[in-house]
Length: 237
Ligand code: HPA
Image (cartoon, rainbow, N blue to C red; front, side, top):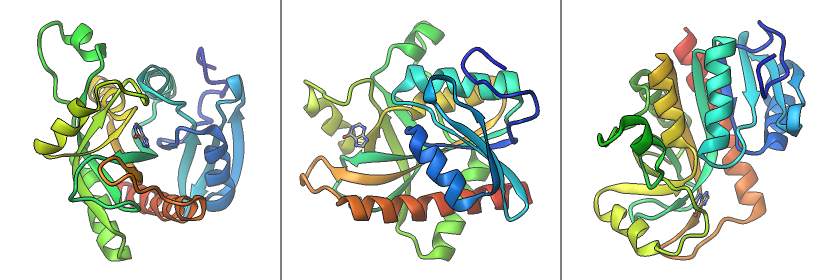
């Protein structure tokens, strides 16, 4: 096992879906994977391995925010040899060009975090998605008729923000939505030479105040998980 994941070596697949909520990880494993087995219950940050149309896939909760995502993504890639991580989450829209229930395919991740400022000391590193995964996700969404938009995310260290005008200014520079994990995920995937992509459904709109209902959230989340699995299937072919 690694420091925070209680799995035996070899128990985690090369492809991993990462929702923030560990109970979502359990739901994904039980709903979409064949022969899913739980490999870790450490801190209740559940992880499961099964298969999707014959492709081995794991699902690991990331927790909320970059420090938590950073711990799990690092251990998956460094200690368990994971090759491909797809974050499946939600985001708040900041751009008028996207609507609630859209799926954002996260091309880049701007951030207000000091993590990369400390890591790169004076250089503004630009975390980006793996192009192959992005291309497959975009094609799979088009084929499934899902409302998907490729574009920039803002990875914020705070959900409750005193400076919402700064967040909104990013929309003027093409950023579509705010969430809390992708910058760390993309940076660490680059560090370990692996592939990562965030898919995030728009759960709320910061411009209009519109929110999705619980039923809507479940349906759009479910569609997005199918998109993530179709992306993994295409990228494994
Ligand atoms: N902020 C940060 N993360 C989020 C939001 C938000 O408004 N909505 C969904 N995830």
